Amino acid sequence: MNGTMLMLVKGIIASFLIRQVDGEYEDANRLIRRILSDVKMPTNIVGINSDSDVAEGLKDTLEWISGLELDKQLSSSDLVDRLRINTGFDNHYTETIADSIVRDEDSATIMMRIEHCLSEIKAQLHTQELNRTVREIYREINRAGGHVDKEEFLTSAVEKFEDLKGSLLGDKIKPQDSLDLSDAALVREKMQESVELVSGTGVLKTGLQGINDSTSFGGVPRGFYVNIAALQHHYKTGQLLDIFRSLAMYNKPYMWDASKKPLIMRVSFENDLRQDIPKLYRDIVGMETGRKVPNKDINIEEASELLSNRLGQTGYKTEVAFFSPNDFTPDKLIALLMQRIEEGYEIHAVVVDYMELIAKNVKAERLDQGIVNGIERVRGFCFPRGITCISAHQLSSEANDLSREVGRGFVRRVKTGNWYMNAKAVSTKFDIELFQHIVNVDGQAFLTMARGKVRSELEPVAERRKVWAYPFHEAGSIHDDVLKPESQAIYEFSEMSNYREGHAPKEDVAEGFSIEGV
Image (cartoon, rainbow, N blue to C red):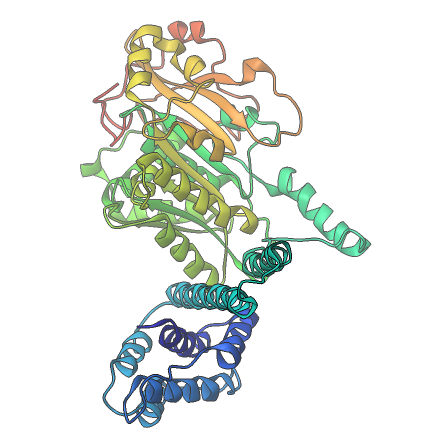
């Protein structure tokens, strides 16, 4: 398919899809006007069903659909019938368009396809502009013959290419947010948003005061990307599930848009729901009653009611979803979030278990580039929308060797260096880094934690608040202490030897919720 045909086909598809979703698409309208006014039509072959004849039919169809009001209902069958009349009944262009518009898709997928169509149109328009500029320069050389003024010619050529460069970059320079600082009302509104972002009203508290107190925010600001770093089998999945539960239990929704519904999501690529749901219930019962409930003894009715009540008690809708990581990508995660936004939700947090598993599916020359680019794309989507993203990343084999050398002081050592598996530079994309490691002291398991980098802190945090530990309990894994008058975190690791709650539990400790690997 040549460039002209591609632009006409993509323009028709985009014009149809725009009518299937809500949104402003002035950029699409501008591009379609450029196609209709500037596109070079094929002229080499004429006759029925020739490229020239079909191109004219496609152009007529694009002019017709672009002239319709956006709120005018248009069925796929009406468009295909008009295409067949305008272009002739037997051509693969009509079949291509029909295949692209006769689909059952959600709004997020349609919006992504619209952007893809517009991107291809822009690329072809840029190519045509470049070809036109090169032809103009070539004609100037031929007209001048052997009497060309080289200095004047080069100056003219450079000016043409500079103009073209400005045109191409102009399509790309679109900030996610901008502000006219001369407008006091707009500045006041943005200042209010900024203060709320890092104040108590704009911060999400976890269930552990140790985590909350390790940042000057007293929790996690909306829009931040938080990474949990640990070796394999050191409670990454458990911690992510604990944080998901505690965000819903201890935070009253503070809405940026009162017309929306508040949502906290957990998206898992590690454990399926049959593993997650019983742990959520057992941990709540363990913390509230001290009672340990094996899976076989769970009362289904009682457990269902308690879990729904606790995770909905502050007003949040909470959603858990499991996907296979094999064919999932960060772009699909963004599409899922867009789908919830389109459904009327304001997403306050998404807990991803865990991003590395899908970021490595991003196509790139090197694995580390793909992982970094994938995480950067998700953060770039979440930050301006106030979606806190909390995920995890495994530490490297070098870090594993280090753990054997330094014992319970492991988290102190790794919090100052780049110890991430497959992508050391990924730390530059995180807003908050948390490191954790399970240690066993006299038969009792503890989760030691340390705070690494924190972006845009309000004020310095005392060093003693940056490294802490919590004991695992026989019932309820690690117990939340956010509602207690004082933090239950252990800041002096020597005190772990004096702790006597009980021996290390036989489940719920390590990755995958078994003691193996502790």
